[in-house]
Length: 446
Image (cartoon, rainbow, N blue to C red):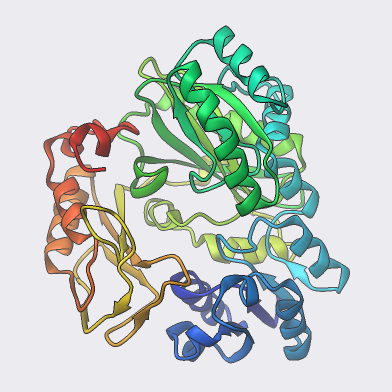
């Protein structure tokens, strides 16, 4: 096992990784920008190194500064968390070239899943289903119009190297497609350095269901059941739960086996998540693979009893899993709500200083947060305050505990999405498990 790990991230996920490292006796190194000098993750780590100015490009995306911090402190490995550089193959490769272990998959596996066009081809070769769409990248708007006419509207226009809904748009007609193609390509180019686009058939009223996997370097892999992530705004998840109220045992097994087949096809190691769309007839289609720890990993931890960060560390250190598929438990039900500093109606960031913050407590309640009373939510980074997780013996108990916890949650000084979360969890549709990806749209809460 590693003696010292640098955490190339910030906020709640940095604190989450520190917590597991401390339990395992691993020293931690935090990195921080000028805006995060007084942040909780900086105070809690054993060491902390400044890596740049507040803008993310000058700090948390500064590969050279982060690698220098690792070398300066003698860190043996780097945990990238999620977002930022976590799925950057160049970062993983640069770390390895300097003799620093990247806690995640190989650069080759990251690259294989980084391009959604290339990933679709890999998935098809592995025998897993994909949504009908373009064969490879679409070279021009005229080609896009031709393909859309063949597969039928509505279609999804997507950026090959996109993420977080950037460069993605539902298109209902040729006129819309002609208008959307150039603007989405330009946006993807600005955000990801590549404006390559592709088309997929729009699956009507799907559910967004993902499979968590763990694969070691000894040829063993398991899936840790599924997470339901259909409640989203602007293609960003808001509420997640495990297991899915829609998935039955047969579908769960088929999706899990498909996920592991894809992992074998690219020689995947470490934790990863395969995302699928599931239609009303329970047909599922590959959406993308996230080659990192997910924001919503706590719900999987709550029902399996496994610490996913611990297993990321162990796998990266060369240890075998030591357990098989039949050993993984599924205990009760867990729900996660993402708490954001944002206007609950317009869903736009609401930066400022948190005057007062009170976290809920109680049986089955977990808080993963990166801030406290007096912390500033800056405009430089994602406005997530934290994640509230509730676990119960069954879904009804998990919902009841989440309702009570949300009612007890206090954030003053800035606006938050707590009113929206309370309304979602209290809704009849959520109680019934009717959580398709159009949940907020059809409910009138965009």
